[in-house]
Length: 517
Ligand code: COM
Image (spheres, rainbow, N blue to C red):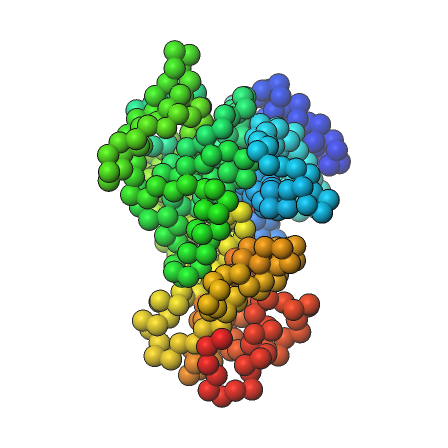
């Protein structure tokens, strides 16, 4: 079908997307300007974060660009299977922890021993996700004027030509924004019904998981999904071959994050691995065998979740164009986003970690600039990072340990302060922490600022709680520019502002030889 020239409202897009997804109709949706006779400067294969932002930038620079995507919507896996459901589940985990902590107190319902339906939350997501999809299509077509073909199976003919059905499209450049998919461990029983990853969870869950969940992996997705399952009231056992959460480098922050998860009932087995997943006669998971340093243990479960990271969606195309790829199929690129074939670029998750939205969008824009004759380089580095437990854990810069290796005079400011009574001090009291602060002080979060005592520059920041993530985006930008405690002290805090450390810095700002705090 051809939609060019028709005005599509968000509602009309939503109806079309729902209908197409539900019916499995494979008719492509063409939105191509028939009056524009210019050759395309680039065809973006994939209209997710990398493709959509790259294409918008290329068009803004005066070029002509076409996006082709296999889904009937733009925005890619983020709103469909990845970041948006993950954030929904993490919101649920935070909300459920609050409700369990205050169960039967104040106005809270009794949640003791109550198991919340995972399937209902997944269904809620499946029914709600087409709203954001429709907004992406509307924004791209009506506001950004992008040309695209959606719901399209495309075939790469060569490094300048793509075919959709019988129609061929020529471009000076190709940009591969093909994304990634979850890694599946090669464990006997991995294909049984009841073994999920982040993608199949939202696409295939059709039963209510039982009371025990086994999570494989110790990185971000294992922890994030694991905390959600745990918050629904189920026993959740996380099996990691290595140390848990290796990316959270500050030891004290890591300990607090792990302690709080354990207090919520999460169980961890580090340096252990699943040796076998056993199924029942219907081919459904019934138990797992876990190899540990002390021998093998068996756990009954009907739900196993693999949170093992990602591999590139590159197989066919990389082969067809003879592109160099690395581990897990990630396409190798230079700092201009060029692959081993000079007019073929690759951007976003298909190029490897970090699998983050900002990196995908920035790579897309970088490719667009180079295609349009500018010289642009990008390599993701020194970025702020986060993960969800039941809390939001944010960090930037150096851990205390890293800072001490590199700087002679490291100062630390943190909340709660070191205290003989342990953690039972109700600070930091950041956003959404006030109930914990009054009733369960040890749960009111942790924050730490790491400073070079000589230059007074901020070296690192860690925050566990809520409400800091947005701030960390800006804070990281300022830290990279050399932000000092005196600069931070000069900012205007809203409320006590523990999330951004302003209050602590202001208390120390006048002191030329300030101490730890
Ligand atoms: C965000 C998708 S959910 S995109 O990056 O705006 O395309």
